[in-house]
Image (tube, rainbow, N blue to C red; front, side, top):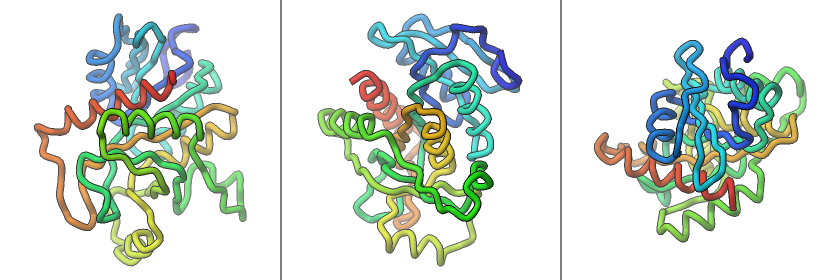
Length: 234
């Protein structure tokens, strides 16, 4: 048990999927895990542990933004022994070739700042995914016929961004999509010697201004969860 996670020793699996929304954690656990048990509800941040094809898995919310994710990822790795952490979440597309419902696998995550920025001071650290997870997820997505893109993303500090000039430069330099958590997850995984990957469903688009209809979100997010689970145990 930690300040933010009320699980008992042994209740957190070594493989953890991390959606931002705690209610999406509940949905994913009820949909994909067998014997899912609630192991955390401190501050309303839900975590569940069960099995998937015989493998123990925890699905635990991270909250929105890097500061929130940093709390949970730190405690999951440091205090509960998590070794593989996969963010499953939505993102905004930033390239015309990236379509609504496609999945982005974040090779790298650029950012203005993260909770870990103070450690590096003048160094512009480049957070990146675990290659084996990335390769496995790409193979799984292709097998499933899911539109998939691997490349750089942007982890933003804010949701309501007012920097169209910055978005223009990121698009110009090939950034695939924008979200708010992956850069800190990758940094913490590197710090502690864990594996990390962000598997992201494109739910809206900054260029085309399309958005995934609410009734289609569950199916598209289900593809993302399946890709993450299969990649974790490939």
